[in-house]
Image: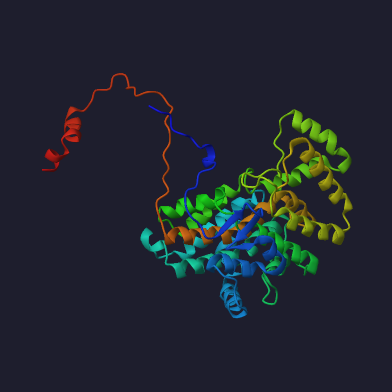
Length: 396
């Protein structure tokens, strides 16, 4: 018997169509519904990009205003969600807070729906659920950071856009325009990226006809891993460990000698460098100037240069976003929850796409365990064997 062709990690396997996003190999650009993401980051609000990913087209002013008005009711931290977060120790990883909060939101929204089929939801219901999570997550993430510092919850404001409101709820003061712009760009860049691990997790869960909240909760679990969303945290840990640009060479010598994985570099999809990096690096540069932190720029540039020269592997989006979030004032452990707040748009777009043309995702595996064997002393139940071998007689 010929051994099956195993694609470890599903590398190179195409499992379905998607109209949500793609990487254009000719231009090395990440496209959202056909638009290069760098163009969207330069011209659009995150709210408009969310509309695009959910609906296929950029919104008119009226459509965007209607979406914002619909989301306002879900922007404050719900008392039940706050109570659930407050039950957790303050030293839990904030991804556990976010996962718990989304699960609570789902349970509350689906209360009274006792049929699992009814919980799946219509396209309109799931678009509303997507907006619910999009609007609710900033308060959840912001409160998580604040409570770790012994600070009180700050409610959202009606006069601020998504990015400015997120920063307001986290830090309790209005952010400068340069900071708001950098944060908005980061959220757009993180919003979607085809069939990555967490998105595929969401689609697998959706394919079982589970509900949108369950799929997003599973995706959060996948994103927590350091080989996926947790990488942006790992980048800042590396920066902290190195300290200054002068320490890069000896640190990298030791890291490579011990075959340590250097987070923030390399990507399975991009072969000529992550197309999102230049946009996020430009945003980082504006923050370096704003906060007068040339030391960050020197460390960033030195590590990038040394690693690319030695390994020929280029930075991914996590490399510039980690120090950018740090300059804004976010705790390192908050970085991946920020990723959740962005990627929930892409997840939910894929969930709705999966539901529209669903097929249960159930791959095969190649067994390589022991051959069939039997428990010593086991006596077969001959009556059961007879029934199994002659089911038509049993049924008659």
